Length: 303
Image (cartoon, rainbow, N blue to C red):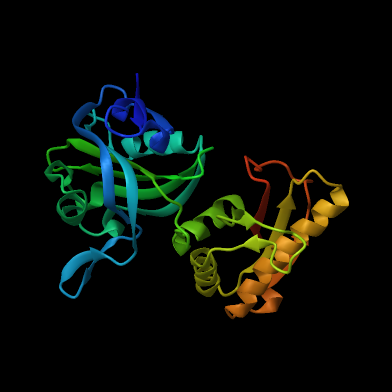
């Protein structure tokens, strides 16, 4: 069985169809019981991008993004014997079928207190469980629609062994101009696991100008933070371009993208000797997706 995290047919009676024409289909966890569900417009949704920490005497997140759009929420009780991690991974595996980017992830006590997530953040009592048996993740999903989905997953096991899972999916009604950066830890995890990280939200403009791409500041800051946390790392900035021109022109364009990103990092104080830039044109089509161009951050292995 599937439930549709809809921004279309279920709400067509009260919301203009053209405003919410996309949907993010996710398969329902087998035999899970839906405790609560809702689909409604939300003009002040808080997407948590860090763990809950005690700040000035109260538990709060120090990174968050306020969003507006159509919000679908589901609180599920998993079948007996099914763990929190299994429920969390069930939905995360489905997100990986899309063009997904991890913004933040935490597990166990690294997330802070379950009480904070249940009562302060989601405001759902059933989600209050054991700190050592909790997991939270925030993800951005890009579809053919220009406006992305933002997905929050929270899974927790209570003291009575019952497991609850919260699935929030918000289809934003506008693009975030400054960008929503992944946490440095998420970027480092991607670089360790894959050896590369696709720099997000690049907007290709006129390749004949001095600044052929638009780069959102939040993503630059996050990459600078990564390089500060990993002072021994060297990276290659690898540009790709798929314009309907000759390979030679594609390579020129893609090198310009990589060089512009390098210049931005130099302005932020990253040492030139830690970076190299390359332009492959369309020679590496794997991972293109629906992008017309991209720049990958590649971790260079050094002796």
